[in-house]
Amino acid sequence: MHTTVLVIGGGATGVGIARDLALRGVDTTLVERGALAAGTSGRSHGVLHSGARYAEADADDAAACLAENRILREIAPDCISETGGYFLHLDSDDPAYFERKREACEALGMAVETLSGDEMRAREPTVSDRVERALAVPDGVVSPARLLVATAAAAREAGARLYTHSPVENIHVAEGAVTGATVGGRLDTRVDADIVVNATGPWAERCAALAGVSVPMAPTRGVMVAVDNPGVDAVLNRCRPPADGDIVVPRDGTAVLGTTSVAVDDPDDFERTEAEVERTVTECAAMCPGVDGPVERTYWGVRPLYAPDEAARGDARAISRGFALLDHADEGAAGLVTVVGGKLTTHRRMAAVTADRVCERLGVDAACHTVERPLPSADDPVVDAVRADLGVDAPAN
Image 1 (cartoon, rainbow, N blue to C red):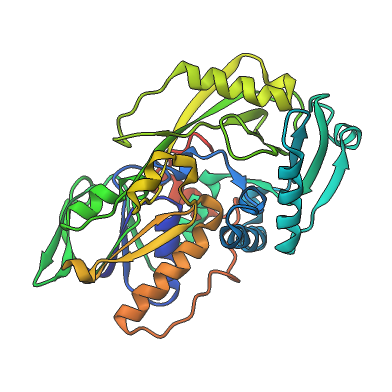
Image 2: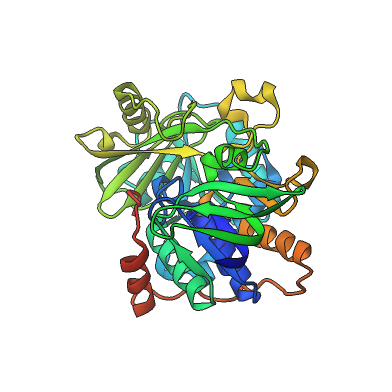
């Protein structure tokens, strides 16, 4: 079979790229080795970031989060819970860090509010007596499963072809340019393509290697711990530099606690330690004592961190959570594009930037429509049809 663009990867970014390109009239096919959301997207904590988490460390990434937060609320309201969020300053935390966080958020034009400890407990009685003050920010909670299925339904309606359980076995390169890929599983055919997009998250390095090019990745694992929700209604963040056990997210009757950050060599085969689970619960309980109860379930995700600088690999939390778009023409694989990094909140923007590059290479003059085009609602029959046909693997729901 032939397609103009072959997108590899059925996570949020890959499906978003397929939708964006199809809306621009580009013949697009997506393949995914498992079900939709079977990788990083379906194993997130599900926070719709306001950008506050990154504001003082990476203003550009924070600004992108804030912009996409607002866009997703408009185009995907069925996928989002308007919980709001707080950054909590405990008695042992650095007061100067709280001030830097607040000033950085205000500099972005973010609507924030500073609360005393008592005012915070009046809003969220579950928080610890150790909370001395809090910063209210416009975080929210997003359902990865609903978002992925709705985006896939919109992509299919726009004309994209989507195939799950169809792993890429080889990427073909001839005379310095990609020509397509051999796909196994359900599709089981060679797909000829003018452009191939590698949107495989933590597996981007392996996928790129099929074409003989390099994408240096430094994936890290993180655990999410679901416990009975003691009454938390908003996203709670610890107001300190990112560390283990610094976020509590209300989801479907549970509180999801996260997360750790440990380097892994293989995103398919990595250790899952009980010590990380215990540390996550203990640290989160410092903010919210009621979460220190029986663990209902755990799930583990792997972050797709792009690390071209070898020196940065020694500190996983120091690696940028922004995204990178790589063109492999200089490596002898013209027409192969890789998108790595980022987060669920910014997936639409990542898809738009990637689609812009693809259209530029194809000579297609077509604007992006994903900012203003709403996704199908949860009760739209096309959403149920896509879920049944393609399948979803998302412990984060």
